[in-house]
Length: 369
Ligand SMILES: Cc1ncc(COP(=O)(O)O)c(C=O)c1O
Image (cartoon, rainbow, N blue to C red; front, side):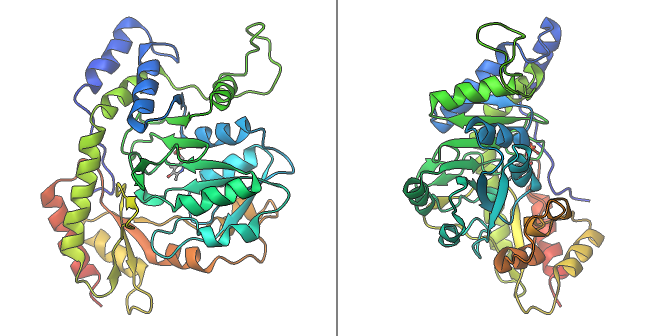
């Protein structure tokens, strides 16, 4: 089976991780945490970056740091991982959904304003599958209604919107370093911002909110969302190779696009003129009104030894969220349809050209009615 996402472990990973073990710096103190944070901030061109246990925690911290909670609303796209909605729910606030755009599935900026109420405090933007969302109209809405903009760049390390790296275009950016991400720490995350106060608040909250007056005195509810030095050591080594990784993703996408562009029943991912996608994964959609279904194509691909993954399930249909009384009678036709038609093919950094050719041939066979 060609796996859908196999990580590539960087040259210096062993050396750095072993160094933590040899020196005993294995918890959340140690030199690699600061180095990883600094280098990640420098890579993006942002002032502040702080590590977290994972991307879900990063999103939770970002929302909590704005003081968002019960009675508040946060706007987010319908087609995304449940982490985005969970992070809102954890704070006691209410997630409010917006449908996606046809091409990338990212939040549709033209459908945001109708969802803004007196309770809205923030817009969470997700740069889905490596392609940036259209930020300018979102930033103007945020300015007009005085809302915070939280970017979820978990899947878009190094992706660019009008020449700017995503993650610090809004007020705060959140990243995941799960094993399938471009930079990985196994499990891990990062919050980045240019806002010093927000950064200090995130750092406070992620470390149990020890009072500045006295350690072990706590004036507010914090969390333990600290990354370990071991994870940061791996992250630092991965980050040293990020440019090569991004180039590899784009090379992979080019090979796939050239190999698959003439298949009648399949739609390929696009790249907007204002965007640099990092093609975190290479997405395919079965065309509307096509004689084949996504399930039949994925089944055939599995029988040919090619692993695939479904698009996210729309948030408004998630039983765990509906049980909270959310999203009843709401409809999101574009994202629901994309979720039905979309899946992705092997896209890991360890993928070889030979494997890509095998996948292309398999998709040709599987997508033929
Ligand atoms: C868009 C997006 N946001 C958030 C997350 C959550 O990150 P983590 O798995 O590190 O908690 C993920 C997935 O990993 C993701 O793909």
